Length: 272
Image (tube, rainbow, N blue to C red; front, side, top):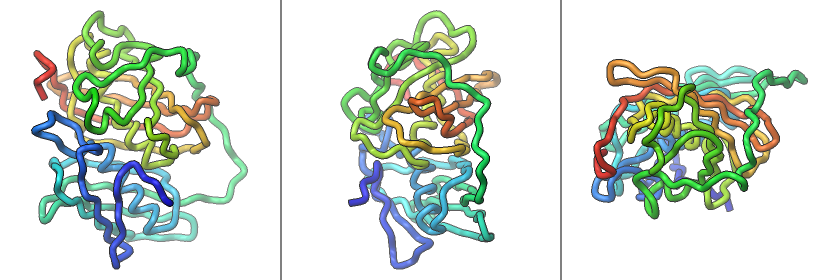
């Protein structure tokens, strides 16, 4: 059986997919939950990979609005260009006539023996030697309760406030508690943890709402844990910009990600 972190379903049209929203793919207060942005990108990636039969090269999502459970998200796949080795595609995800996000992407693979990386994985303790952490809001419910996170460097979750991290860097090990395969859609979900580095960088109870999410795939290899090297590059005018490098446990650079986001400093854990 094909197991997936989210419930993406086919229709009679190979270019149309749909996804019922349940609280376990959403975030926010229990009375105001909405689809996690990474799930929006991940479902679009899955829809494009299944429609084209090709693996992801890169994808970028622009987040336009919120989708709330128990609504159903429709995903329309367009493939304006399909060549010998790669396809250019896009997805419009919407609830009824309300557009939620737009994703542009390239998919494919070319025959080549070249495979190198120049970015090395940081020297950090293995996940079993790092302290478990819970997201500041969603201990016990929602998407964040489904992710197992261990902090290798910096502050996360309830521990965000304190001395600002001088280099704006947060290193966390992440895996889905349900042990789903680490594939491109799962990396898209993990990559949407870039805003988690804002509080660590500022030394405040702060985070953000993503405006976009770009994922670039290098090489995906079997791994239980993903090391996320989150780097907050700067904050100004109420917006922040950050990047992430995603490594397998053996040091393989699997993907890179980047985001811009609305920075939100929260006075209490009840603030959105």
